Image (cartoon, rainbow, N blue to C red):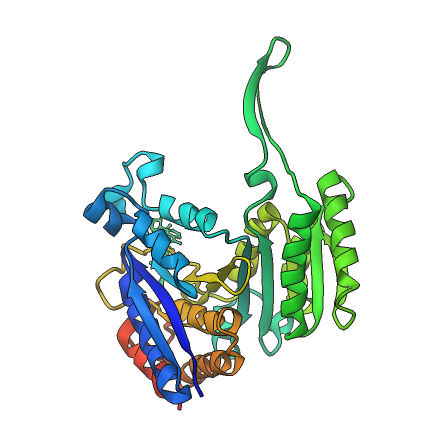
Length: 360
Ligand code: NAD
């Protein structure tokens, strides 16, 4: 017996609607094959919401997201809204959604398919058969949200400060997410901090170590962030789940993403308490490609796979999507961002249909 799941869909701007359409086609195929019903509600956020309502994040959108089991977002933003003041810009919708939906855990897999090895900037002997790691980043605490300000002293002139603050409770809840996920992967968590210098990191390390005792099947090691950033390019295969703070995660997840070759391949999840989550590609609205059927929809399609795994507890269906993506790549189909001689160029919609075709 299949289940019924309520999904809020925010296509957004630029290539957002095109990649979301392709991903919803794949989800529909999953529904047919596995007997699930996905009830979708399309909502406004970003530039299109500014045009329609004057507000980048209308309250009805937030309310409808809260009434859903998960949210799928395309991308927001575009040149035509770049001159608006900060709180009126399309990107304000993203911060608003994170804050108002309580999304405290950001998951960014960096997965290099062996079919795309040529797109990876690392040497073949470093990547071997491919790479598969996951960065779990704390998203609503740390230095981005701690006390900040400016002051002027007679001796030094103007000063500015930002403060890294973490509570035990904040560290514990993100650590539990990382350990829970690691249990279903290769059972290894690397916690990244700067405990040789920062007091907040010493608390981070102590709490993560304590939480680890509840997950005896998962191996934990700690790395300082400077070493971790070096190890990511020296020997990325050593990592399974990387657990880290808001700022370190911001930087390391971008570094890790480079090993996958194209931004068009990178999905993400932002999780709240319970199973609720928002799923979106890492890329933006790519105005240079919008409306031309040229964008790579795989990042959004893989975001749907993450939604099935983390919000709907349907790991088999998630794996079916991931395998279908791999099969389509293995057959040599590529969107423009991944195109190489000898491969077959396809558009956004066609790529979505090909992937659906491998879900049987
Ligand atoms: P971008 O990610 O939109 O594009 C960067 C480059 O990657 C461009 O060359 C683009 O063509 C390419 N690209 C992006 N997605 C692709 C895909 N699916 N397939 C193939 N190529 C792809 O970043 P940008 O150009 O810095 O920003 C454009 C707009 O998007 C801005 O308004 C920015 O604020 C917004 N933005 C939104 C989000 C979001 O909604 N989460 C994230 C980043 C940027």
